[in-house]
Image 1 (cartoon, rainbow, N blue to C red):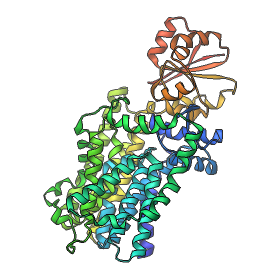
Image 2: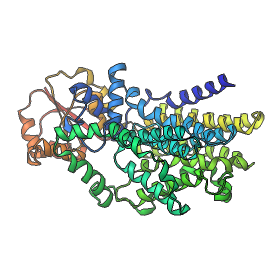
Image 3: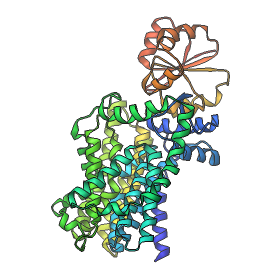
Image 4: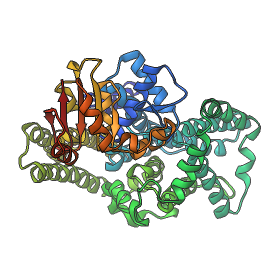
Amino acid sequence: MRTSAVGLWVLLGALWLINLPLRPLFDPDEGRYAEIPREMVASGDWVTPTLNELKYFEKPPLQYWATATLYTVFGVHEWTARLWAAALAFLCIPLVFAFTRRIGYSRDTALVAAALLAVNPYFALTGQLNLLDQGFTFFLSAALFSFVVAQRETEPPRSKNWMLVTWAALALAVLSKGIVTLVLAGGTVLAYMAVTRSTSILRRLQLAAGLPLFLLLALPWFWFVQLRNPEFFQFFFVREHFERFLTTIHDRVEPFWYFIPILLVALLPFIGNLQRWRLSAIESDRQPGEFRPELFLLLWCVIVFALFSFSQSKLPAYVMPIMPALAVVLARVTQADPRAFGRAKWLSIGFVLLLAVGLLAAAWHRRGFISEQTSIWALVAVIVGVGFLVFDRLQRAPSATHRWLALAAVSIAGYQLLGLCYASAFPSRSAEAIASQFSGEIPEQTNLYSVGQYRHSLEFYLQRPVVVYDYVGELEFGLNQARVTASKRGREQFLEDWQRERNAIAFMDPTVYAALNAAGMPGRVIARDERSIVVARS
């Protein structure tokens, strides 16, 4: 049994990670979070993060450090750039299993909980990208689950140890995404006390030991980066937390209901079970006054969803921390419904097939043709999905739990194939193709420019920074700290500098190129894609 269990997790992990080296890095996020640690390794400065050799303080450094370490050991590759994020996303699945078992659920229910997270389309697709939210989700979930275990422990030493795990996980979550960690955790504790009208959970916080541990792990980087960069505090804490939440400075304004469709997609495989989602059915048997883990997890989901819904800055990955807790909450009622697997099977595979058809249609609409590679990946995704349906119909698995796990494996494989299909259908989402045409042939003395755009993955593939003109975006803070004014990096200044060049390459937005070409810009076009035209002077 132990060998088969290990084999199961190895299989799911292999399916989850298998395509990390097969897809190019997408702009902007994947390229950004691959390039920052590359610059750390190149500069040797692991305190002050930089992007395009400009100070970049939007996020804490834990993922940068982890990826930079992977670069140092295994080299700078697409798979090493993605490994930390994707691996921690996958580890949320066995984490859900282990926690569900730990709080007294049966092994079958725990496996169903893990399967619910694996077949979650939103979690599976987002979990493959190089973002900070996967690490944030893993450490938040570890803190949440260990807190629940600590509250349920009857022996004080064990309760204390679990609370120390909670404090350590909170510190790592802060180093992954910032102090929003404390807002979410504190808000859930307050909500639980308000609903239960009890403050008993405060007696087990272990502040005397836990708070020093938290500070020991979380504080040093903030201290050192502030000593080296006096401007850090205002930008990171004031602008990137309070102003980001309360104002529209990041131009990511979305309606209040923005996350509702995302949540519906996440719940799609088991949405037909809604009538059973009552707290009385979700909660396990308990004694009066006993800690209520399911209620606490539900309140966590509500707090995360509400906080980010009220925020003036929204991105799809923000609600990822809901998903592991939600899988635990829904495991019991899903397992109890004899029709839940049938619905999940058809909805999961149907969603994979629908996305495959949608990607083919979108590729045709955008480019006027469908590449052979795109067609192959889409066809394989369809074959995998249909093959599972046929196999499940002809030969039922020995138990419902095994069928859930088989569906989890097929869903993961299907979403991986769709990721490859998307990458081949929209190659301009990454700078890999355009950079590969000449990246190994650019002499070191050749100056590189980017005009009217900034493609984050470009520097990763060129392994060099570029001088940016006619663009500010998220480089604004770094440019200001480097005392680069708009006039020094405007389009007119580029044209003037370009006239003097004898050995340079410029990547530019097609509309910018048209304007500069009309203004008499010298040079020859050496490459292009949907987003960039590459001009050389030599």
